[in-house]
Image (tube, rainbow, N blue to C red):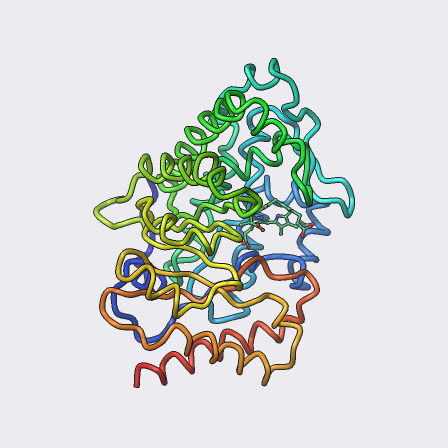
Length: 359
Ligand code: CP3
């Protein structure tokens, strides 16, 4: 096991653990990506997104790009949630301009019953990237590992790609709940093992992306998404070499279920922009930290407007106090059309205004 350099900036980890910080830490979902010209240049050299993600040298290079450009407080492994179903043999590919697709989606009972947990060895490229990125970071900021939630992975596995309505998987959910639960059980075990292997490789926090939990009906959400995230969280290694590894869960569109999400044992809950941070803080109390939640579209406004929206959001959260924690982020991934200067304005506004708030 490699020895890593000591951490120089632990503000992000402290906020997740609801410990006092000098300012509000900030990172962005999809912070390494197409809005950065340096990312587009590396991707062109790699030939494709998967060529990038499956090569630890390239993955390290692009993970560090936003860290070199902005004073962000955390880095996130450059990879994708769909590496896990790819390793289960579903055949991930990207059709130009159409997003991710699977060659062999789970459509029949026989498909579902043949599903197995992946051999973690076939995901070594991810764990090698984690170790290489953590080494290259040299302690500048913590490294976040991540996975999709069991439900969100199932959405792509059954549907065969992205969808607005998710009719194929919802038909399975309502007509064959037994098959749905069979997939989710396997996914939950796979996700827990996958995240634990990232922790072993050097991830200092982990995040579960439940991008499509918000597409579910009340009741179905709890049964088919939340309960499986709870299983994952309960199986995670929460400590490595005596240091706590915080876990963040993020259901996009999950604001109405915040109480329940805060109760599954995670250290922090991610929020999208439909939620008021002050009300969310009052609701969760000192049970969990919060992460979010600026509308990514605000980054299309001018720097003064971005600054004003950041201040509004930090004011809504209020002055941090003992037992509470806030990590500033967007409410979902940054758009590929974002001007890079907008991120400069946002990060600067978070740091300077949150210091002022603390007096
Ligand atoms: O945050 C980061 O910087 C880390 C990298 C990261 C990617 N995908 C890289 C990526 C993370 C955390 C993800 C998670 C992911 N992937 C989610 C959950 C978060 C969310 O956005 O809801 C989901 C649902 C996916 C599946 C996925 N992968 C989609 C829908 C797409 C197409 C997106 C698009 O904008 O076209 C991808 C591809 C992908 N994953 C890209 C990146 C940078 C774009 C690929 C490219 O370079 O062309």
